Length: 346
Length: 131
Image 1 (cartoon, rainbow over the protein chains, first blue to last red):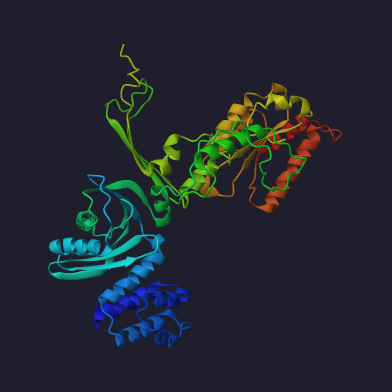
Image 2 (image 1 turned 180 degrees about the horizontal axis):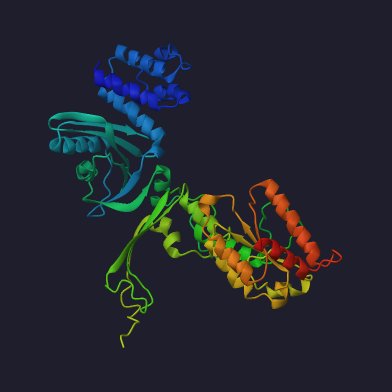
């Protein structure tokens, strides 16, 4: 077995938390059940990984099998990577039957025609998701297995989720191969990025609970109030306002859990508006500014702003439109023609 | 009675007892909270500022998250001739101690402590703050 393959397998096993190693090796299926029985999973991880490499040596593992183990690791711990969403476009409306073998063949052919040294691995999962791992090399160097790119393509949709490696120059090639293999004709990057792959899927497949415009004239009186210790000595003067906020929040965010996003970027390209007398920035140039909201769970924290008394309800639509518009990167430009010049020179 | 801002909703006027003490809570982590308090102050009758108003600043334990300058709050207290208390609600000991202080102030403001009026107590608080 190749030295580099052995080292790669060893490092991959080391990444896995000790309690999960057995399960992941079983999913991999490269080592037989009998071989797995011989492993002691209670020793130090260093030793476990050495033992695994030993067994792989016996089975003569090559880079292909090692890559499969890597895909399994990344599929389980997909939240460790940053994912971008891409949308593909078709010219016509023809519904073509998706042929997996055809897809794989075309993908490999397209990549290999441009770049000889690539490792391409596929793995299919239940929800029509095809995981593709690509390790990139150069004409003179073997593929770098430690910086692969991952593509998750749902064949029944025009969406692909890509976690590019640091080598961004390979991105156009990857996109091209994807488009050709899936019989689309164009691909564009959506302004939507997050670590949580499932949340991205929820947003683009519209699987999160959306606010349905049901006509609700008055908040239901029998709505179950949170079972907090209602101390009868405390009188809430603004109960109706609190209820209004809850209602507005529910209309905007819906009832269910929000998709997990970590940030929202707003790039401002607007003019700086100041008191004309203060004479700041007399150059009529847009004031470039980037506003970034970040949080472990951005949408949930936005949802709790108004009930916590930190913001007025309803929130700015710039914040609440994030799931509907399926984007968390925005560019805000000047509204043309709406606000005419207000300062008049004497 | 808890309110998020003033003026109080008029529909509950008939249910409200006499107000003896108004505590304005300012969260030092939120500029919005200070703005809200400043806007609400305008709705308070002048007679309350003779010792029946107090500012309570919360969240002072988390130094990294201060959004409001304490000087600004102290100036607010001076401008309205009312004491400013600082506390951290997340610590039970301080929470209890602050509640006890407020309760004591309330007793004085309600006239339940013979010999001490709200005004004289307010002056006492101010003098000790200046020292």
